[in-house]
Image (tube, rainbow, N blue to C red; front, top):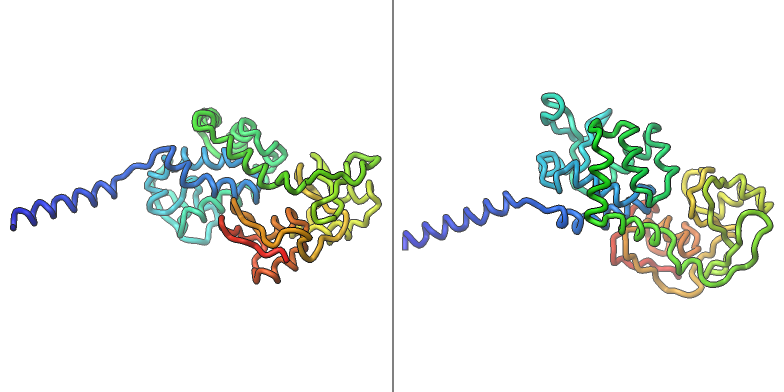
Length: 303
């Protein structure tokens, strides 16, 4: 019996060590984090393929010491960071890296890192599925010192077919159901005015559009456009594909009772998708943070 217990103990230790030493493959990494990357693309306009490829490359498929001990999947160093820190030998001994309570926070911080720094601003003029331009632009902006960095990202994207997630992100950001089949009229200017399924006139922004330019084209007050569209901060530079309402949104849906979330979306995004006032959606669903990404499977009340 003692020998039996001894071998059982060895077996248990072996299983434990096997679990500790498990190395994740690139395919497993993609399967685990693809929906998070798509959600980041919808919110921040960073191609999901780029986010995934950088995560794979910087974290060694999630197996690096930095990823395991600090949930840091993108190798972001401290840089005025006030949160938790970890010190690891990298280019120099004992370098300071950001530490997160979860890998999701790392993905979110990666997006903010790119959007909040002027040196990466030119990347956001590229199309959301231009992963080659993004890969080269990251190197030019100084994200990495390795001269082969762009090609490493591109090779990962093309070998693992990561660009398929860019198309999902684009489709999710502007669902075809939003567009319907009806067009109210074609404007004399640049934009076709369409009729939203919630019976509101809207246009789809083109590259280089601003609220000011649209207000002049349709003789609508600039303050009205800001009021009709819940974009948060009053920005004037619009993204190609943004839905811009020319009339006030409704307080409820004229058709659907609920909105089912298939990929992470914020209430602000759903407000534009469904043509419902953001304030009304917040009240109906008792949600106080309109920019927080809501999880897959959640249902949002529209009436």
